[in-house]
Image (tube, one colour):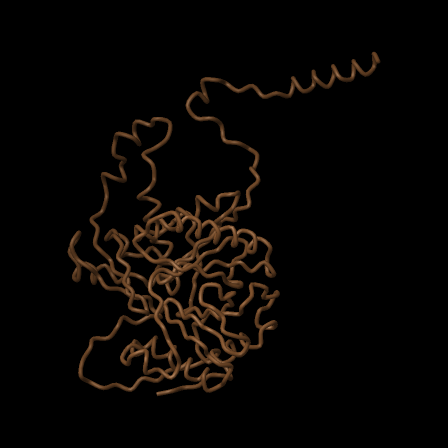
Length: 385
């Protein structure tokens, strides 16, 4: 009994000796940074390049897609094969709860961001050929030249916002749990909230990045969001997503990028927004809160820069004239300083730029030109003029 008391007393004494001494005045304003890492399900989001032009959702009638949906569903495999001659396609399965599933050999197919619902498409090569032709027509901007009623396939246009959430639990349990929680939270929020826009929610098989589950893609803009519905925050995140869409803004804290948007441009956009929302300084810093910094005082004149994407989408940002002299000589995103100075006047002009691999839409004229389309890659490459 005595030896136990001595051992306990000795442990307490050692513990007391190891307690660090923290000067109260030094941390009176801000507490010291913790040296331990708090457990979190969130992974650090990195902006990514999402190089696809259209997302095809094929109804399957069930959310049980197995690890590889194409191996489980012959119809889905046939659609994937038939459309493989087109580059820039993302093909995933949906249970069909949002777009119905007629039967095993006849399906509904939704094309985003176009919002085109192809109904009762049979498991038939001719039907798939017509479907592929329609995809090409939408990219060329000629699909709407003829009424939908005259199309060989039954097509309907679904207006509004389309929210695609990965719920592929067979691929990763996090997607199944968090994705379904997010869908339920979105449905609950929309059922009790009056919105200016119309929303349709779709479950989906694997879209990519299950480490960032739950993942959501918001069409028609094609913004990708990750790290949603974590730590029982599904309701809060659902509200944040809808609020951002209602206000036509981006949920920057969860943003993974945008379809067809070059990742370098995305980084510039995110950096600009981060500077806009940066605080005036912590701990009552008088310099940060009240006195303009030296950087603010020496701000360069700015111009409006409009990026023209391949699909014709225009993204306008503010840029300092100093940015038109890239520090990296290989940086292709800005013209030479002389060109910028001659084409733009500070604070008022607009400069139309495009990514090197993208071309701005050509000027409309009466002249006829010949255009060759390259379909597929490698051995499957075909050319059509």
